[in-house]
Length: 399
Image (tube, rainbow, N blue to C red; front, side, top):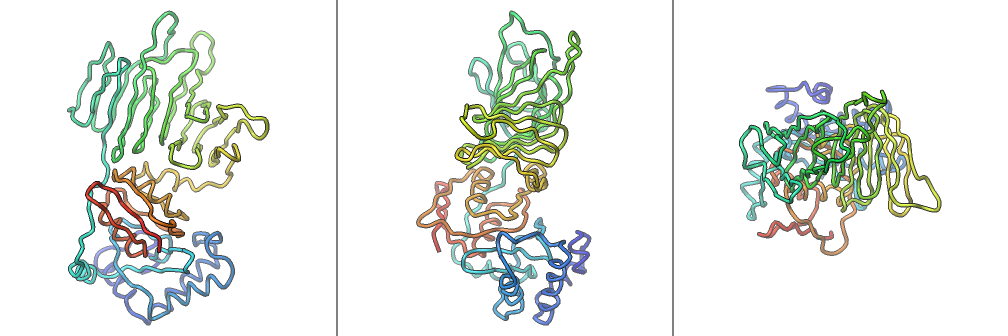
């Protein structure tokens, strides 16, 4: 049953039976051996950064086998555990293991709660289109169809804005720029005039010309966006028309590829991750020393840190980078601040801290279609102390 669960092939009565077996104390040793086996054959998610040495793993096994092990059913309809149906939370105080349980126990616990957990719907498709003259159009309020705006006619269809056009000479003509912005709690898809596709994460924006020139195709991005860039040739020179993505601190030169750009202002670093093709990442500002540009191969990531400069990450978990586009949050080896930044953008809440920020690591995934109350239930069971006021401020306290 455990093997089937890990493969996502456990359903119906077998799934219910699996949860019942997890509740039985006699099976805790079996589960511990299963985890040990995954550690031995290296199929378990690496946790060397979180727990070092045999002492760490002994603490994990002892915690599983202990009678005091916490057994709860979290809001897990759309959760996929890191391994062996568990989420491991590593903090300074030790190792915490949270198991799934039957829905009946969870329902009983919720009934006994005196203070209901605040709720909010997850994010959805929505964006604001800003025209060259500053006029703003809220796309959430429009029906599918063609939008006539100052000589251009983009088409809105089910959460995607499509610009039809071709790369052409722009000499002597004023270039019209549009900006597509997603507020917190919104995401959107854009088809650029050259046919390239852009997916915008929450609290992001892209500024682009309504017609690209034959010299270059340049866009400006803030926040996070995933690109699938088409190759375009200049008919006169028979050369590729370069595609350029500019962020506040770097420039990405694209030759025709799939890549993700994370350039939020509240993130400590800008990260550009290549999935297919080839890109060159350059620092916008001049520096006296250090790497000024990087040429990435698929699976690599350019990381720009304001203090240490530009570096290449050669081993990147692409599933974690692309989780947002694929409808999930990936919290593998994520600290609390990183988790909260993602949640604040998607659920449109403000997160503040009182006292020292809890030092915890999170391992696991969750669907972006969960309500906020489901997420906060998980945080509460992870020994995170918080309260949420009527102004959508989530206050996190030190332990």
